[in-house]
Image (cartoon, rainbow, N blue to C red):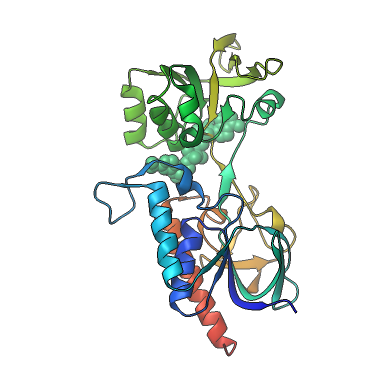
Length: 315
Ligand code: NAP
């Protein structure tokens, strides 16, 4: 017999862990499926300076480890598994996971968002051979080398700054000359002597596919059409993230970029009608704020709605 849980949480980032703390503390014995990227985006970041309560900042992995420990204290169970398939047409909902089948009365979707790639064949061929989307994971390999970062948002600024610890020169390549990055991050990056900015520029090809290591970039200036070659040993993508909601396609409403649409912040819908007992929180449903603290806040809201739903259904 497949076990039926009161609540299952998909994802173990800031939103999922906050939901686990709240549902755990409510005595619901939540099961957290940790997903493809346990700990979510904070687990691969460095210093988090804007999460309230840490005047000197806190390292992302430490913040996540603390949250997990806090959730475990209240009885949350963690499984290193991800969702393979789900049927939201029959309640309790049946989930097929990489670790087996589970039925659940409620579901909290906190599956977050994953790094976006440019989509160039040469880029894809060289992932792990000098192309990366995680500066904190791979920066160390570029000690004493020259590298490039693509993007014009906070992630790109943060990556570029972090990579100056290892690389002798970081070229920041952005497709426009206006930036999404916050002023403080942009100013910090611009002030760094080892960061050089290249605006109105796109990567056309990553060179080195035959050699199986990044040798350089073929770049195009979008204003002048000029093609240039930049010799570098590493390419880091800091161009944002895609929501992890593909497994709900056809069963949940999403926007044009694939983010789960929510009603009153955390209620999921299908063709405009609320899907009973299924809530979404964190980056998988938030294209606007995408902050650790807003993810945590929506995780809390989803957990409170789970409690309310179960109470209304006699649990
Ligand atoms: P973002 O703000 O969406 O920025 C993505 C950047 O990548 C944009 O500059 C975009 O260019 C560029 N881009 C997207 N697709 C591209 C493509 N195919 N080719 C070339 N460039 C492309 O994403 P983010 O930087 O990851 O930030 C997401 C959220 O997290 C933001 O709210 C940010 O404040 C937050 N964050 C905060 C911190 C911090 O405070 N320490 C650190 C990281 C992230 P366009 O501008 O032309 O669209």
